[in-house]
Image (tube, rainbow, N blue to C red):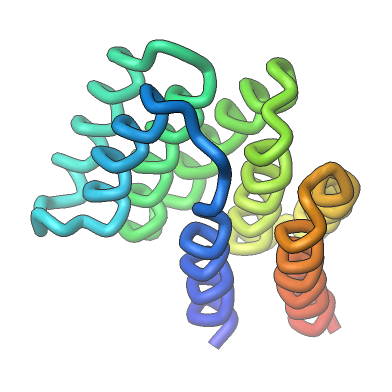
Length: 163
């Protein structure tokens, strides 16, 4: 039940926050990456990792790097390789924080928190959910409220599982 809930939160989080305003260059890249995030081509997870790596290497800016890492994260997450997904999530979070990518700081922190919860590291999970809540305050009002709602739901589920 816990894994299904976290998966649902993660999936909803990925698609609800696609409302970010994008440059033309990032918009084209975003469309390409979203095809793989949704796996519309029905390729294997290993192929998704390779595609994500290729997208990362061809990225022209930090926004694109973070977005391409989500292809790799999603592939490893769906294979239940949470440690590998976590490593890439931490890398994405580092890029987002270092380069002040406001939208991505919230999302990557939430992603890291979710993966820590999946591997049973409750304290680390709560720490990253708290960071995501702080970062969410920098978003526009609509995304702030939506982000905070989803983060608090996921955080409460982690506490509930901890008992």
